[in-house]
Image 1 (cartoon, rainbow, N blue to C red):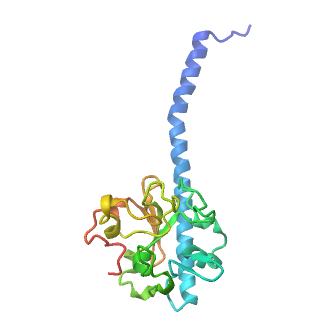
Image 2 (tube, helix red, strand yellow; image 1 turned 180 degrees about the vertical axis):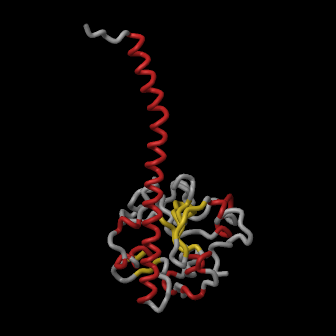
Image 3 (tube, one colour; image 1 turned 30 degrees about the vertical axis):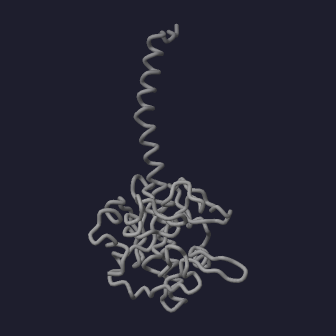
Length: 226
């Protein structure tokens, strides 16, 4: 005759399942976050490759931060769009930022080092005569940041929560309260507490914000052209 489970045995089984779930769920969650971080790293590397392709067609110059024509206003990611397979690479799966800016246009989860790789002013006053540099102007391409996962430096900015124009550390920490400017960004360490970075030479990796942005000497160590 088949013996039925007793209530105590059922409770023991349930307890074991609960313990296993408590152990495994964080592991699954961490694996999911690691996969998102890997995808984010792949996307930013593809963006940097598109920068290099853009340079090959434009006298080795970096794209401008933004510029306007009589019919449209283009951001740096619009300029390199012809060199990417699809706009999915504009985004980081780890990011909590929306895919559209305050104007309803598709945006990017990455911030461009426009304060050194172009001469874009903090008040955007030189949009009409802005200039970009040549990639050969960087003395240490492997140690010069090009793109980084980013978000707005201002909470509830009227420009939206993206940070596609990256503030220099000397800008960010030199401003009142470190709050930054509307429409400017700071690194976003959303990839398992790391920011995802692409460098001028084309390689990409993950670093904590303190390893490349805050507390550096000189202050703009990984963003300047030295």
